[in-house]
Amino acid sequence: MEQELRQAEKAQGQPIAAALGVFDGVHLGHRQVIAHAALHGVCHVVTFAAESMPQKQGRPVQYIYRDEQKRRLLSACGADAVFALPFGEMQTMEGEAFCKKILRERLSVDTVVVGTDFRFGRKAACGTEDLVRFGRRYGFAVDIVPQVKDAGGVPVSSSEIRFLLESGEIRKANALLGADYQILAHVQTGQHLGSTVLGIPTANQHFAAWQCVPRRGVYASFAEINDEWIPAITNIGVRPTVTGGAAEPVAETHLIDWTGELVGKLLPVTLCKFLRPEQPFASLDALGLQIRRDIKARMKLLPQEEILSQD
Image 1 (tube, rainbow, N blue to C red):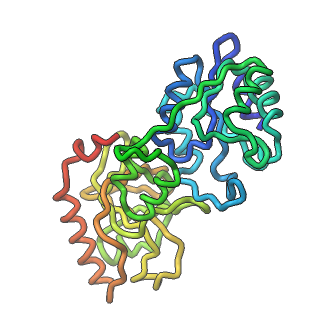
Image 2: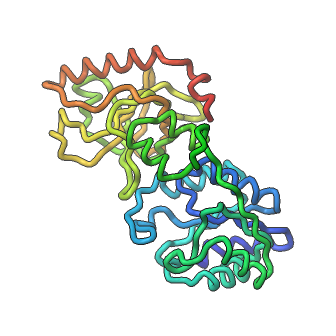
Image 3: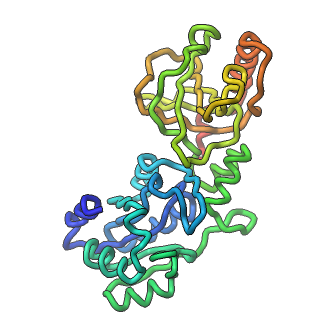
């Protein structure tokens, strides 16, 4: 934690605004909090490392994005610095101690920006009223940002986005995220069935433990390589034809009309539309035939710039 917070010294002499929250998914509501913080000065996002949070308030948590991806999104939204604190070190700290030791003494914040449902401190015992009270005591202002709601008037939340992802409602999830959902992971070596047997090579990416996995099935997607968007199809699932279903979910992406080596590279894969559920096939030949049908269906969709206009 000290190594994370030491970076704050670089901003001495400038007004500092701290945007506080888990920021899972960096959705539309989170983006509003960060935008407000940027209006008050240098924007420091104070969050938890997602992969250090197997539980939140006593319940298992499936986070949307890994820490590396969350950092990228937060920076793209205007964060000048991101402090991803380890949850284990913070969960026993009382709310007042957090305000005094972290916000005031270590970060020297002038303004703290949070959403209306923000809670903090040991057992999440403190809310926004407590934050305002501690702010008066330790010399920082508090800006409470109203909830952002969707077109139907429902508050935008990470739990709703996780539900939509798990239901395959990728476009609805993308609308609440404020950017298309993306898989960001290193490409790993697979069984080479796609390239050697089916003639349809794939880039294999694994989800992290406790990460939310979208609905199993085939998606229209794009892979980003050297700032170029390559049309692709992505299958998320356990490969029942090959494994019989006894496997952890993996994302397998075929880049259409592209060749090259991707193993070991960090590959962004953007999901645009759910095409069909995962299903077992009687043979690898039948599987290969269906994948080629999926590719044809993928290429009949909207052109690249129109699909990505949601970003």
